[in-house]
Amino acid sequence: MNHRLDLAPGAGGSVAGAEEERLLTTGEFARRGLLSPKALRLYDRQGLLPPDRIDPDSGYRYYRPERLATARLIVRLRGLDMPLATVAEVLALPGPAAAERVAAYWAAVERRTASQRTLADHLRVQLSGLEGIDEMYRIEQRDVPEQLVLTEQRRARPEELDR
Picture 1 (tube, helix red, strand yellow):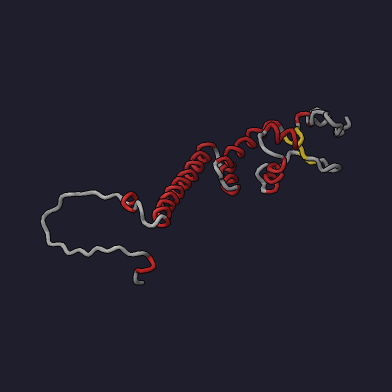
Picture 2 (picture 1 turned 120 degrees about the vertical axis):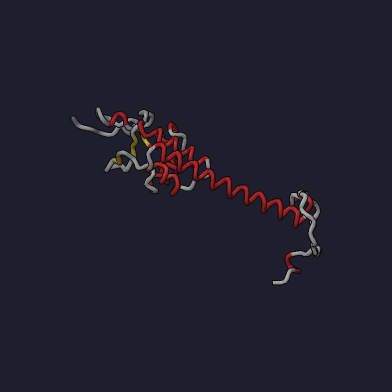
């Protein structure tokens, strides 16, 4: 049996031949995988989602429909702003370990976000001329045994502090 590509416009993106009929063109795979053809090419270059077949004459790329789940997983991981290197780690792991890697990634994102939130609050107070400084720090009172205490208090800007 002679296998030839059906490259006619509107041919549905299928490749003639019993086994190859299940293959999707890049455009069809991208649409069904919820990503752009440009992203699909990037994921191919990164080794995340290489095509199942490349036509030697035309260079057209084809994908098995079963790989749509991987494409959609990549899209969801990228929706978390996960770097491609981390996406590759997740894809290489079995289910439970992949889930742990996603959890570890997200915990790091939350730590970074909390740190950035604190920095943004500090900058807001600093740039507003120190108005709202009381809101920036939590002040608590507690009872302690009587003791002799010496304190000194003054306000200083960072540029006024001694090295």
